[in-house]
Amino acid sequence: MGWDILIGGVVAIAVSWVVLIIALAVVRPKGPLLTEALRILPDLLRLLRRLSADRTLPRGVRIRLGLLLAYLAFPIDLIPDFIPILGYADDAIIVTIVLRGVVRRAGLEAVHRHWPGSADGFTALCRLTGLGNAPAQDQ
Image 1 (spheres, rainbow, N blue to C red):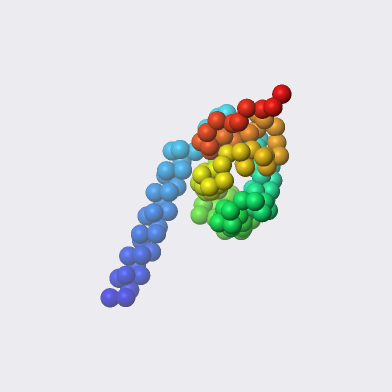
Image 2: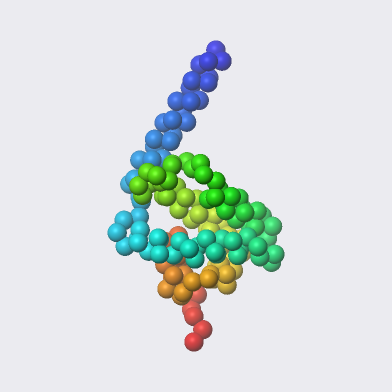
């Protein structure tokens, strides 16, 4: 009886993983979106570090950001990074989910305040993650 449960659990995890890979293959960024995502990657990593160190943000937000940075640094992913395009898609989806949570709790202005890149890069970040419209720039 115990082996049936163990085998059923392993099969369920394997099927879920295959479904995740198929879903990522369908919704992965294509063409200019992929290029845009790669262009803002260094700024995004600095953003995550800055946000996680900001003591004015709620503790839960900082903890989630710290866990996200640890996940990104950890060498084992849901989908290995050596798989072209899909290897990084799981990371992108997790970053998007966490950033949306940060915006819900701390506001888009907090993310904008810590953005280290250009205004165009922030607009690209908002477009790629669905965070909303970038705040207007001061002239």
